[in-house]
Image (cartoon, rainbow, N blue to C red; front, side, top):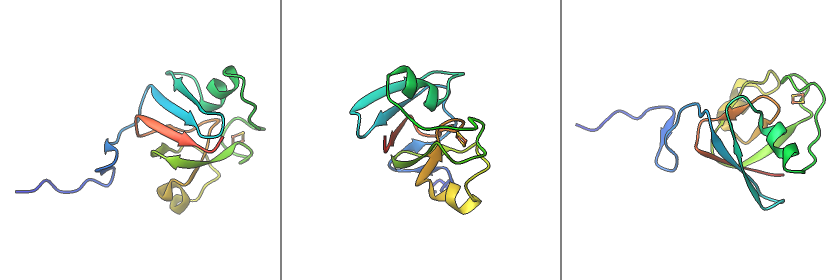
Length: 107
Ligand code: FES
């Protein structure tokens, strides 16, 4: 009997779950970075010398929003609507993580 489809599982990404450590590829900067536990994508991006705008750094202003080109974000912001979060086309990199092992973002 076939396994029922999970809402957070698909062929492209396998089993999706909150990742402690994940890769983030910056499409424009051509960098692939590792986001370790306890660090935000924004911090890792800046540590790599890439400038990214921010303001609140707490998920409430929307300044750090970037487009997601691949992968599935794990949203922790208060900016996107539930429908936008489900769509997964953009994310706040100051506070959100990843459900897939890798994200490709428009930076
Ligand atoms: S800097 Fe305000 S939501 Fe990320």
